[in-house]
Length: 114
Length: 116
Image 1 (cartoon, one colour):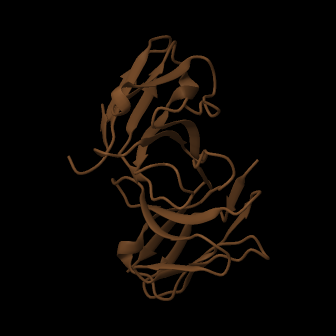
Image 2 (cartoon, each protein chain N blue to C red):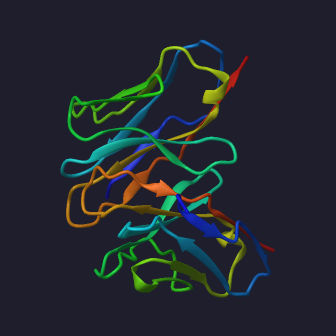
């Protein structure tokens, strides 16, 4: 079945550091890929998405490129801020069949210190 | 309301009791999902409703778990004879149609269930 593997945290960075959170997936067909974020005390919300190979999703300074050849969707940000501290989830939604449920990774806790 | 609403926000129960968790999706959204978030386990899919189609129950961990969606809107997740391993945050999400694989899901804040 479909699965998502993301780097285990926690990740602790200083403000303005470069961030990479690795994500790889296993899926049949042509999935869409997502990063969701959960800020402290809040519900999950979509951060960015990409729907086909070589697409780049971007939002709030974060980027991720859909790499079909390496089945990856790594999240990057050039300069993190304290307000980016949150749990980040990589996810995929498969186009096979009629069920478009999201399959999530286990999440990566990011803490950014001033 | 503007978002997905879940109640209660916290539920403490004794082992063996039944619990009901409620989800009010965003008005007009035809797809509704339940997930479970356990510490260190990520988000585990439980069940999916889409319009009038039969729900996808493939993620329900045992027959103690069931869910209904009445009138295509409100959903109730029921856990019978709760066990300590059921302790988790139960998340509900909705999306506009559930008919495309690039749709954004809108999540509620979850119900924290603690089974003593």
